[in-house]
Image (cartoon, rainbow, N blue to C red; front, side, top):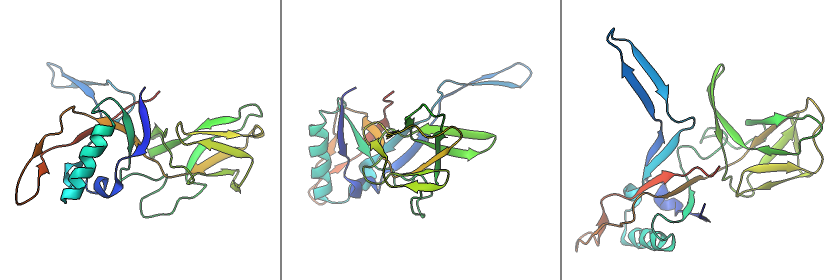
Length: 209
């Protein structure tokens, strides 16, 4: 899938509106009971970044970014300021934040994920666009400063040697959301007093795997 490893201007994304979306089919029975079925196994996030455009320069930056992505054609990174860390936004990233896997003496590559909720009701979200230089890793609680590498374009952590069987792997990181524009039209309203405005700039999360 066509993707540019560039981040939408974070000073504009800070003012965005949006969040996760689910798709649930609900059938109401004659008895008044319901049958509910999840159409999607994973959530999909939607945003409107027009709320972050406050100056003429912001408008210029968004139009330029839109043109460089050729509208809806190329995906890109987006910082969701409400959810961009392996921990709560107010806390610092720790190597103990999220489970990464359990060693089996053979596997060397592990995918980053983020857990939502508490047991037994937990949703594991795949993290495919971690921010380079922010990933921290631990083996059984001991942080590892070498012996591993990460791919910020896929969210895969690879160890030089397979962790021993039973070893608990954990990780912490910052991450972006892979998105694309959800319209091929940048509808700008020219206003002499406000120097232009945009009614809506929709973005939608894309699934890369």
